[in-house]
Figure 1 (cartoon, rainbow, N blue to C red):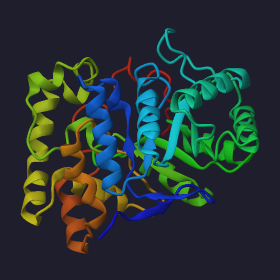
Figure 2: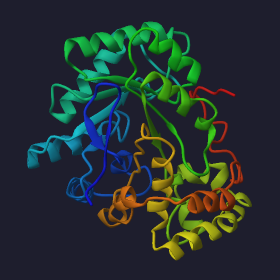
Figure 3: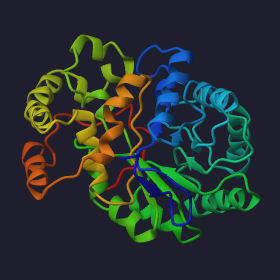
Figure 4: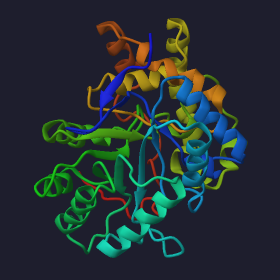
Length: 330
């Protein structure tokens, strides 16, 4: 079987049901090389993945530059999503959603990618003192100009999505969602379905926690972001590892990789979900690219719910510093 397809937004292109998150190309979760990143893009394309997600702040444009190089080298035409709106070099959480600010960032992203159009452009973080209706008007203007095929928002609330959609159709919302981060079930997944927006879960593999083998605590916490993250701090880390062991055993008993099973669970939550796991390793990608071939029985669903019930994870998904700039709800 080939990679399944899902539609991006109400009237957007059909894309692979699993996309590729390209933040790792910037070295966010460990050192990598340009060649390794290019090889990962090759592996994704070969696996049938044609939806690549990046941002202008991933390595201060490095991720976009690598994708641009890959486009020039291969001549392939994937569906690309990128983001803008976060102000680098400013206090964490500072956003610029003004028309001039977003235009400058979008044009810079297009230049790094070497294209004159992207299929999807997100506001990466909201500027809270600027009405989302006004920002949506700006984004709709970019769409009418032909600079973007559609637009979306990252880390917003269902109420904000409704406000934006009252101005123009929102193609996608990108928020964190996985078997250990279930907040979108309290309104976002449902609102996206109602309004025809695709829901794009980022970190669907729990920042690498959902792996076939338990990761060494010292190696994990050597990464600055994870070192400061409550779920990767002790005693939470050991408690999470203990809680996760039966799920890992369940995956192995069914002949599935843990990452593939975790992604298949997301795909099973609705046909308007397109998760974007990130990796810088072709080998890791091949471990989960077959997730669309996993189909659950009612017994499988019940067992997953028993093994990892809502709220099972120890610790918050972000520290107080890390959550700055994210729109909270509920």
